[in-house]
Image (cartoon, rainbow, N blue to C red; front, side, top):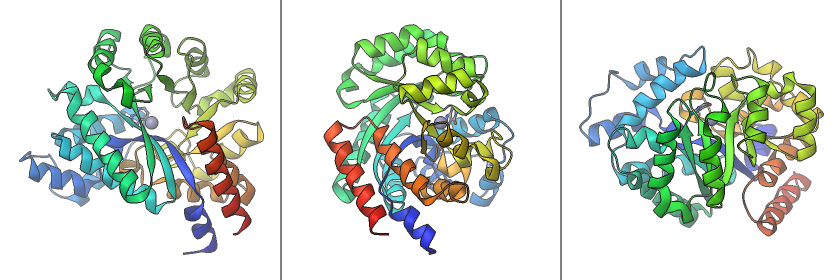
Length: 335
Ligand code: HPA
Ligand code: ZN
């Protein structure tokens, strides 16, 4: 391992943008298909991996929703989560705030609790095994309607004491944040945090809607905010955290070359950017791979800033954030 690799891996970090269904590796997909006696339309792990070639978000979403069909039991979700946490721990992640898409599962007939209980069990196991803390964020699928999102929030009611917040994902263009204004208001009334994917493929106006109508606490992706200087100023002044995902951006053609990734511009403009893996099984790498992908574009101090930002942008209590920041600074000072 090079000095830079060791530095990136050793930096204590939080991951704030991770779809747990997107951490389903082909090997585990085949294993779960076999365990649940399900046929999948691919002959081998290699054939499946070869299908992971996307030119836009929707290409990926089609295969991602199909892949999730092998998840059938609480044990499956537990195993999925623990496999992710094991890799995240190896990458120096000490805290993760993970997304799940309940509608992907309830629409297949699984009760809400199968995914929620399995994931919460995997999260407890990761805390016990690695000391890795985590929070769970329920994402609404924005290509579905408001009534379906409200039904999901209702179904989640018995679990809301164990769910940190709500998010918004899936096909962005044509499904603006305004579609979910009332659902997000209901989530806020439950005391839930709010995040939303915006400005990945959608225009800067969707980011403004997420701020003004959804009252988000954190912005997922946000790349296209850079097209609007007034919006950039607003995000920087508000100290809004952006959960940026370099390898996802490359795979989904949000950027055409990782060497021209806008992370240096984001930091230069004072945006609180963080580095995340999004859907690591599909996009070619976990969080340390994402730091490595942009490491040539930023200074060592900026890598430390990105790790610090991951805790500043988390939903952890202030005293816990302070403790993690001290650990980042101690690591940076001794390496
Ligand atoms: N964008 C939108 N929806 C998603 C993504 C993403 O990057 N990953 C999983 N669902
Ligand atoms: Zn995402």
